Image (tube, rainbow, N blue to C red):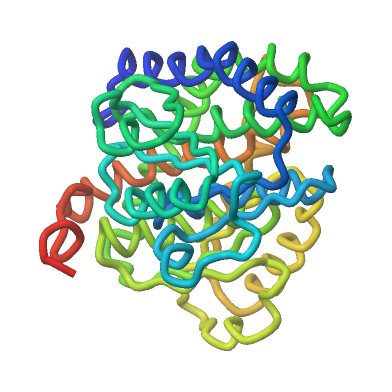
Length: 333
């Protein structure tokens, strides 16, 4: 596979799922001590990656769980943030300025802070009350967030199948390796067909909306300097659809949760206008070792793995490094 470090990929994913005992011990302690609400705080991609777990909690639980932008939280505050709040942060590098400031702000309000990162000596790991460390550069954080949210809901009596689900997550490294292998040919074909495309229209919903936003903003815009529109499939018929034309590249991210029918509806309309519609559907992957009832929960990880292969091929055909930036962490702001 193009620019794919298999040992590193497996080591990183294995380190994430291996955090299960630490995560469960932490959740159990928090539940026993009692807390009032949960904030999922991020910046950019790590903010978007919190959305599936806010959604999961909203679907199953009466607990107040909300995803929040780090910089906005500091600037605007939140009346419900206080001594009975638990706040989770994720950061690949552990150095994201907005998140560092948000940790300091949350702690000043008496909140209990948790950090997931790959660097124990990073500012974020040092500033939170407890840091759970994976291998360096581990991405995505969905494994850790699934374990944390799943255990929390289980302890509240809102996720009866958590133990079986968590057991199956141990299989994810090998399962995702097979997903990457299966995705390779399609990723190469998409990149070749779109090497000169300068605008993409992305559609997603349910627990894939966060990834839709992330891939549009963090990959295509930030890493490839391409123009995009991103729209939730439930909101597709309220504005953005007017941008569709016959040659518009439409990328549809399709998952396996309750929003699937909404994304189907948006895709069907898009095909009536555009002749360039590509669907990346998690249902196309076998996921041997994941029970049918859990497939929808791991869809964000599946899609991240698939589109990771697309990103590498776009980097190749466009001769544009995924590490190249003009402004982000280059200029002061």
